[in-house]
Image (tube, helix red, strand yellow):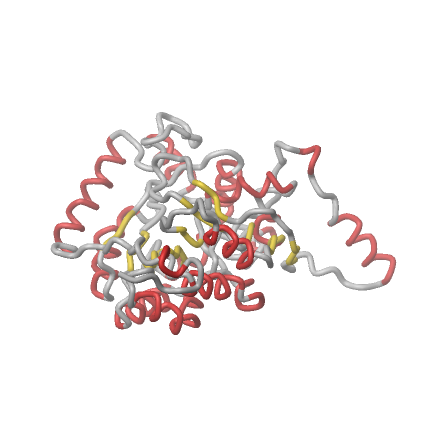
Length: 357
């Protein structure tokens, strides 16, 4: 790999064509031209925070193999830069590239808490777990600045509404005070993503995420405060982290996780091109082997959109991975159960007052 050609601190190494190209925003060239005329140096790798104002925030999830009914995303795009992230494709809907734009241009929904409150106060709404976030990480670096996720958690607590969280950032511990209140009524479940125990692997797969040590500490801290944790060992990538399943399961279990889930990597849409470009630069010696093994799990393609199969894969390699995960559950999670969240309290608090039991 040529160090000069590799963009440090980012996952994607390029912007790729947006299939909705008529909606693409052309900002960068104007900005660079301004810098040239004014004599200023352009920081090409700087993250931009762009406010957006959607009319709704809670999304009904229609995909049958995702495992959630409703989700909400305070941010679109994610500075973590995970090279495999399925959410990259959604950045194209906003007129940006799924590559570097996804990591550098973060869309910020500042009205998220107000929109959430309006939704769950509706007479027609019946409490179901809403997941923060089904798409991009609600505790990515932008959250330290904007605190939108915290304001949403305050709404969930106010109305005693169940909420799930998916994150790989230890910033969640900032909100431990609210999480402790939510867990008293079984209103919170947290999913912490741990993709590898190797820091070298983590740095190139997920360049702007916290260390593995920090993630395991986060699982332990949440568990010590009675907040149930499911570890997301995802995605499993043949030839990169597939050999770590047993050790990953032991590590998260030892730190208190009560369950784990995993998905087999699939590189839909623009992600196939982004991942292929990245691995040839980041892991040139094993690039072809890894790509071929991923293809073997998806009928010879990187692009697999078949419900029920895309996250599981098929074939010899996929079967070996599932067998190893089954053994890991038997060995390290026997007797552990992730609790069902409480949907019953919400109606009593919806209008700001308790009803008689």
